[in-house]
Length: 151
Image (cartoon, rainbow, N blue to C red; front, side, top):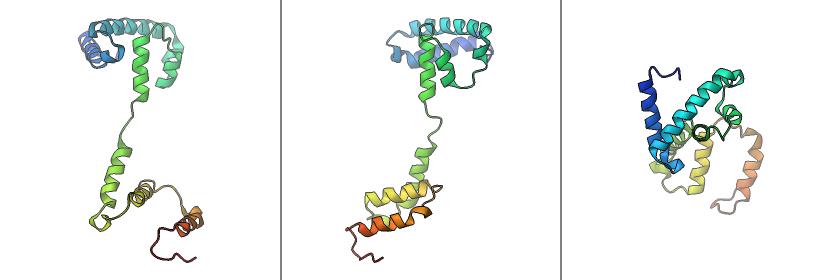
């Protein structure tokens, strides 16, 4: 509770959370709001009495220690917190690399080749030098080439 400057700010945050997530519970916004207030009061009292909970540093560990019967709303919110991605940097990196790879010179490139090039470009940190023989053999055995691939 100490992260809120006043009770007015806490009340507004509880209302906003209840409005946004009331559909998950299938209950009214007012009902979720009241349950969340009660669970926050219970949690505040539990944190004062149980010193083990104050040393927890991850949401997964906190969820393991939390009793689902006493905190059903709060435990669902922690599950949502755990499953939300931190960022979408991987997806953005994929799209920006695709923009660099798919140029007008490569418009007739097949989807399989474009996917392979994109994976090579995105995952630059993977060392493929140890598997060069396997890669050459794979392309040599592929019969879809117009030119003979002589080893």
